[in-house]
Amino acid sequence: MLIRNETADDVAAIGRVVTRALSMLAQSTGTEAGIVEALRAAGGLTLSLVAEEEGEVVGYLAASPARIGIRDGWSLIGPLAVLPARHRQGIGTALMEDALCRLRATSRGAALVGDPAYYGRFGFRAFPGLGVAGCPPEVVQALPFDGIAPRGELIHHPAFGLGQKA
Ligand SMILES: CC(C)(COP(=O)(O)OP(=O)(O)OC[C@H]1O[C@@H](n2cnc3c(N)ncnc32)[C@H](O)[C@@H]1OP(=O)(O)O)[C@@H](O)C(=O)NCCC(=O)NCCS
Image 1: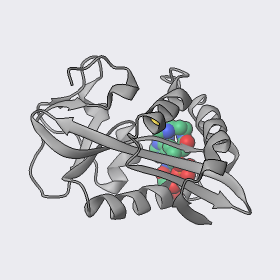
Image 2: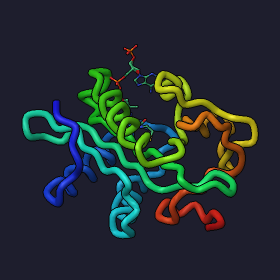
Image 3: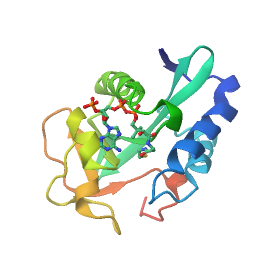
Image 4: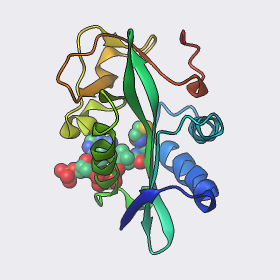
């Protein structure tokens, strides 16, 4: 399996992988592929990594610039998506490890909204005072590379359409 940056040829396949993977998730809004397109159009994809196997895109990870409270320099990871038929084969882990390695060089830390049972293994955790309006606090998690506990609202890129204050 190869983890690499997206190319223009991957765009349709990325949309399919994101839609198929996220449709398995009860809390999916069905808008995730559109969010990736909006991030791409806005130049908001800090990372756009595909997992390729035998010429097929089987997994995808996006990262975009984010802020926590008044501190910028964070990267928000998501969506992370693996084709349902390929779950539990280490593809999500490979994408995440590659992303964290790259982001350590450029970001204060990584943050995301997701299942703590999965993301805890990469070092993500909730912090007192870290949140996103309308989300249970335990699903809003961060991995500060500088060890400084983040506090405040996790502000996503406007392409997520959350209506947060910029
Ligand atoms: C979550 C997801 C990206 C994981 O990808 P994956 O390639 O299946 O994950 P891996 O094979 O790397 O799994 C690593 C470990 O996490 C576990 N795991 C996988 N999905 C899990 C989940 N939803 N909850 C808890 N543990 C999970 C695996 O059992 C494995 O554990 P092990 O190493 O002890 O065997 C994938 O299941 C997916 O696309 N799900 C639907 C979309 C989604 O939930 N995206 C995240 C929110 S944006």
